[in-house]
Image 1 (tube, helix red, strand yellow):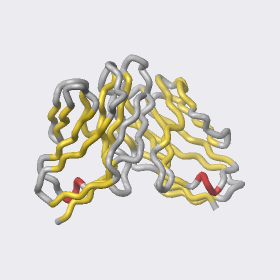
Image 2 (cartoon, each protein chain N blue to C red):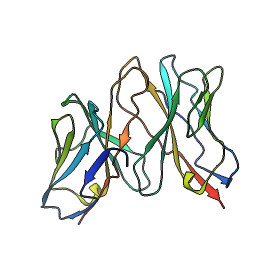
Image 3 (cartoon, chains in turn purple, orange):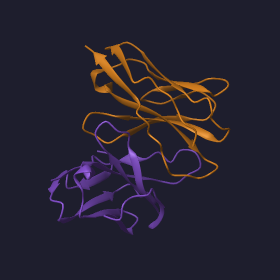
Image 4 (cartoon, helix red, strand yellow):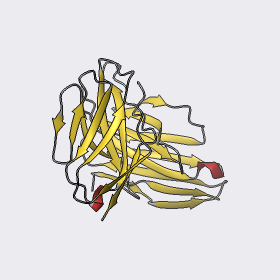
Length: 114
Length: 112
């Protein structure tokens, strides 16, 4: 248990569906992140939120829409996805300090787009 | 952030020490060296980080070369639970960037 939970753990959706991934952190952190991990590829940072404000969007297609209503919750809204979007989606949180700011990851949501 | 180079894979016998190398020849003076690992079917977990001096914690030790162009993560007694992909990452404190570039890491296999 890292203090970061993600739901659902597994999700299968069609290309015309709309679904949301949820992340919650119980660590009192002020930054939250979405990462994508495709098979045989490194983790890719998708979005960063500092103090509920989005500070980074790494050229992610608009079919992925993040939402951070407060510093403990982070959502990733999905619509009209493509099969190549099938991947493990990981949420992480951290404090933003000078040197450490280690990130704590959730277990991920395994997404399959059919 | 500067990039790192790690071997794709390594093997170790159980209960023996493991030295995982990382090269970062273009490291800047404000880059911290972070190590994470990812166990099978889990998200990555933080292992250790350092700037110039060697560091120890309950999980591992980090040995940093004097010129900082390389570092080594040391697991003192490998267990089967240490089988994972280990990532060496640089983070520039000066830019304040939150982006961690994970790369492909080193897949460690622990042999019973």
